[in-house]
Length: 399
Image (tube, rainbow, N blue to C red; front, side, top):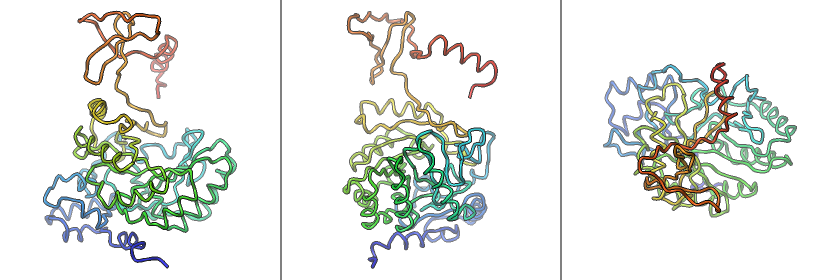
């Protein structure tokens, strides 16, 4: 028999605000704003839990959490270069979509989409085409197709449950799925990507945690973007996972006007590690339709992480990641700490911005640096690599 507390996440989800008219009871909205919200909701649905609303400063129209959940008229503007499927979940050229519920982008792991539904709908969502869309509600036959593919493809070592949000499944649905995955001999690890601890932390019930411990090694990847989302309630529920030995990582998205400052990022990262959550990825914003108002330039993220280096523990600094459009995979952005002068001597930039010479081999002495030395990021390409790259660009094949 479920207790009232354990069912609270279901009640919270049922009470989530999906109609902008009901927001007038919680936020100061003009009639003009309300008309705009109704139009925007036709493009991408809205869902805000009472819990998440409670974290918002209602007196601040620029509240960062409000920006992440409240529809914005900028979403009606689709810019050149924005894509319906920005990270290429389906790319026929790459043959990365063997069944309707699977994206197979890397040889050793796959994404499995068991549900299109979420605890709330992020305004910067890169899967806006399917998130919350009942047309993408999956049939049992599609799940069987997915498992047939997983069972016969022995190169797969990891399955990542994504969506939608996998924790929108009820316990018996989720555990049934995990049992089938664990029964496949070549699958060694399972990941669950979820924003439920942000939208609706009550989902992390004792029953859920007890059930998940049976499927170790299991990784939970949360999605906290701002320190104000790291409430006592959220941390209390996430700690249930960690206390039972389930490893928790966090990925975030760099968002203009939300978390694009050193101060906000430092507080977010320190609060995460204080609560035993490992910062994992800082994503550069994908090119989904209607979300360009959240876009920073690439250098903003590089500069933020450079400033953080030496001011927070190294294990608190996430990888700054670009998901290459159309499904070509993730690559990290890195600041060039390793440089070279005009003679090819290695010059290292310290976290404080000083340049010092460095020798690769222990039997060599570092040469002194001239004050006017021309220092450039070190090139790691061989001469052959450079010629190949030039040829690709000349022929228009550089992807």
